[in-house]
Amino acid sequence: KKASIGVTGLAVMGRNLARNLARHGHTVALHNRSEERTRSLVEQFGDEGDFIPAYSAQEFVDALERPRQIVIMVKAGGPTDAVIEEFAPLLEPGDVIVDAGNAHFADTRRREKALRERGLHFVGTGVSGGEEGALNGPSIMPGGSKESYESLGPLFEDISAKVDGEPCCTHIGADGAGHFVKMVHNGIEYADMQLIAESFDLLRGAAGYAPAEIADVFRTWNTGRLDSYLIEITADVLKHVDAATGKPFVDVVEDAAEQKGTGRWTVQIGLDLGVPISGIAEAVFARSLSGSKPLRSAAQGLGGPSRAPLTGAALETFADDVEQALYASKVVAYAQGFNQIQAGASEYGWDIDLGRVASIWRGGCIIRAKFLNDITAAYADEPGLPTLLTSGGFRKAVEDAQDSWRSVVSTAVKLGIPTPGFSTALAYYDGLRADRLPAALVQGQRDYFGAHTYRRVDREGSFHTAWATEDRTESPS
Ligand code: NDP
Image (cartoon, rainbow, N blue to C red; front, top):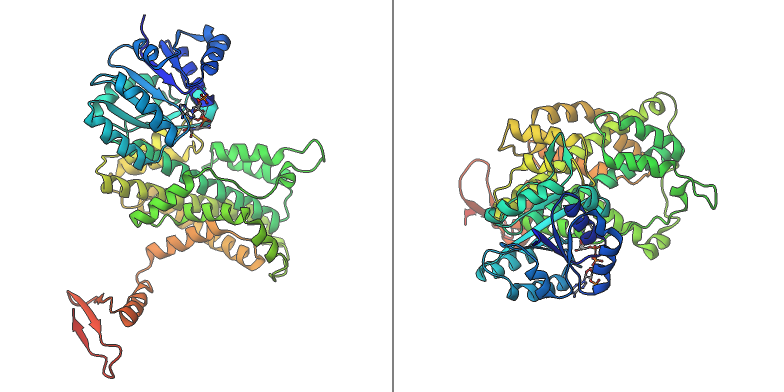
């Protein structure tokens, strides 16, 4: 019997993906650069399904049904290219190579093009949900050709997470579309985490709640519109008490947030595409600031406002106000992320169904949340929606939240509690809805020092004012 799919790269992710496939009744060929991982998988989990271990590239390729489907799950970057080069010469036209690692979508586009010229399908696939997701059902975001999805799709849909009976897997679009969408998913994840962290900081710093009390507040929120995996785990983290010291866990952890790079990629690409994804950018910068230890220690003692915590009515409504601010800021962060996907789709010619993207994020991945149903509904109501903020339901909810949102941001400013996520989201909202922006003045400055020209509100064409002359005459340019 031959295998319907093979997995090469059997560290935590590959091993769990292979086990997930086998548990669903698929025969899986196994391969890893060093033999040990292959052997241990078969020894420990061989009884979970049908595995065909292979100890050479040729043996692996020979174990597969045609068209062959090979999933590469190795360290992203050079190793992925090395593995592709190892297998591509052994494959035949129509075979499919899947890269399920965290590749940069530009690498995926390059690899897809090169392999297409060799008659092979190359499918860059986002896989979200970490090792637990890989084993029990991840959210899967495959790019590549439609044709490759015909054979691969049923397998991936089978092993993906399911929500309301629907698989959290769909064909995202051609070449690098899957990895692009996975990248933006991670960027949104950064923004969402930052906003939740700011909510905690405010509840503690402005309202004086203890971490365990904040956990209870989050648990309450988790029964409403903010119901999500991230809120749920945050409550657990905040409840946790350090065994060694008896202190809240959150107080014994060093406050320097690390990052692996997908958030940074999202922001870099946002800049390249000219999409204002300020919520994601602030979240990445907030991690960088937290990790800038020398800078932070040099700045210790810089003057701030005296912190008189809230009292009376302001204190009473504060948790609810923060919930509103968190919700509104979250809508902004997702609106920005979906606009980035839209911009990527138009730049690279992908046909991406944004409502479907939201729906496959409902299970398996880190940002899974009820809220995503509302995004799917928003795009179903209006497929060409320019921003989530103008769709009926979100518009009303954010308008209703704005008084609280503004009050929370101003409390933060007054008390000197940093809320880059809440603040930038509000500035974006106000920027978008503004009738006139001071960009007109910026255009004047640019024309003054660089003769960069400007357009007028009342006439067609570009103009330049002779700023250095006395009469400052304007002429068309
Ligand atoms: P690692 O990223 O730690 O990679 C280890 C695997 O890569 C091993 O199988 C290793 O083989 C193989 N490898 C490294 N270099 C080479 C090479 N030059 N040639 C052949 N094989 C090589 O494994 P993970 O399981 O953590 O992640 C796999 C992929 O999944 C990565 O791209 C990662 O970014 C992505 N990912 C990871 C998630 C996670 O939560 N860990 C979540 C989502 C995606 P050997 O055993 O011989 O050293």
